[in-house]
Amino acid sequence: MRVLSVDLGTSNTVAVLSAHGRPPRVIEVDGSATMPSAVFATEDGGLIVGRDAERRARLDPSRFEPNPKRRVDESTLLLGDNVITVTDALAAVLHRVAEETTRQLGGVQPDEVRLTHPAQWGTVRRNVLLSAARLAGFSCNLVLVPEPVAAAAHFASFPDRALGNGQVLAVYDLGAGTFDCAIVGVGQAGFVVLAEDGLGDLGGLDVDQALLEHVGRQVSNKDPQRWQHLLRPDTTADRRAQRALHEDVRAAKETLSRHPQTEVPMPEPFDDVLVTRAELEGLVRPTMLRSVELLASVLRSNGMAPEQLAGIYLVGGSSRLPLVASLIGEQLRVVPTTLDQPETAVALGAHHVARDGAAMWTNDIRPTPVAPTPAQPAPVAQPGYREPDTVRTHPVVLPQQAPQPAAPGSKRNLLIGLGAFTAVAVIVAVVAVVLRLSGNSPAPSASECFQPGAKDDKGFTSCLRNLAGSVPEKANCAPGWQRVMPGLRELSGTVVSCSIGNPNEGTQIVYTQLDSQEAAAARADLLLSFNGVHSNRVEADWTGNGLSGSYRAVTGVEFGTLVFTVDDRPLVGMVLKPNPDRKLTPDDLADEFEKTVQPGLA
Image 1 (cartoon, helix red, strand yellow):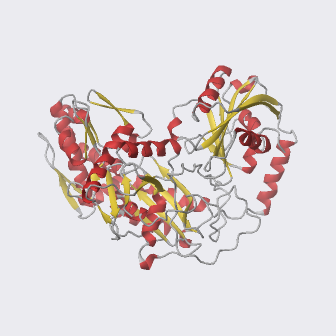
Image 2: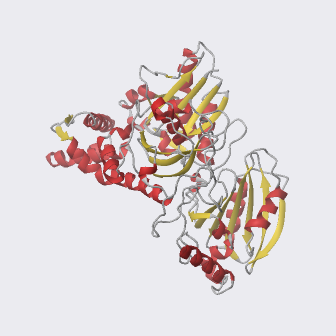
Image 3: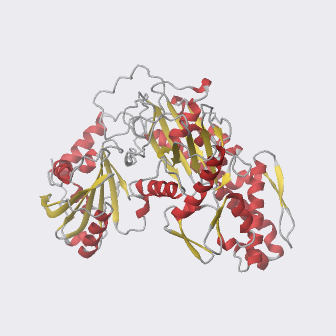
């Protein structure tokens, strides 16, 4: 069995191969364990990747994209005078990996390719990755592995780091483009993600930018006009100088992870700048502190204390910054762990992930809870989708141990790890529900729904709350739909997304309020179109909560979609339900809507 694992990162790509019964090994591309994820568009429309792309960028930086993964939500890239799709750019990077792997295997392809991805990626982004892999020439079985699951698998692969059933590991992943943290638990089936969060505006590239600005403050007064040309190049010569400066700044940052000081070479007429580790840490401490505070918040929101963790595992190249470990120790009183090279941990860990198992999300892990403070909000489970038959998400299967008893009265629509609510809080919540359902809060008029309106803590306006009915009381709801469909961030309107049950197997609901009936009708058509064109559909009317409208339901290979609208209000609801075995019918989806989602249900 020839298995290839690929971690296509923002700045670098790592590939690991296991073949002929030998242990997994990192594939060196162009003589290095990490290959830059960069692409360069030639004048004839071809794409060059890796270090060759970086070299060509010195000739014409306008044709260069160093971080195509960071632009996964965009459809196209303008490189020089060429318009390149993001999928093609990522496919070019994967194709280079495929070429080197095939060469080392004597001309044959691997039997299976495992592609890692951030836990926050929804269906749209994951499909971009899958399409890129197919375009790259991988015709074998493709398996998707969430990055925190792979990282936890790598951690547990060391004999002295083995984890038992019920134990929980925190994964702190600071890459070039983003920061992600996850709580990963060990259940009967293996490793599963209990909770996750991240910062899209924090990564190694942001550290580079902070250091560049610091250097600029030291030298720009010598020739302000020349410095502005470096920051905003107009000519090829200026773009070359800017590219060289960015590389030197990045190299200086990496050197400061090993040494207390270094110099940044500067283009003429500026003098070289001496920078110290203390200066760099002073620049990025506030932003690094945000990442540690987010990890602490995720733990608190799930009723866990740092001392309950089996460890905090650092992965991602930027986690090499000594400040990261220092801040975690200061804030959480836990010494974090790094094993091997943090850049290769995810790709190596993907090899320890079982080929069969449960999805990456579960409600079956029950670590000992710590009651959260009342100020802490309840966590929101990330919606996810089960992939088609040839694409699965997997936990790593560990030796079976005795199951932990389930907490009495647990509810599957809550992430396990929540602390128990106090009796007073429960009574208050019940009273609030009764008051709402008994009509003490009057329903908004149709005219009120054509205005944005105030939002509650979950993002609901009074009109959306009226449409949602009882759903918010039995689901995890949060503003926006980035966790459901990250590629739709450009769409307008007030949006709230909810998850009922296990996010990888349960039902996802998206509520939208727009400013006109026409916009609502157009949005309904658009949402339904994501499942393709289907002759087999169900259409019917519905009433409830003083509202009336109609719904349409269709099912596809990966999921079923039901879209419902209101007759006299610019409101749209969408129900998504995974269809892993392809047995879901539009009638099934209509039944689901009428039993659990339709407004007015008790």
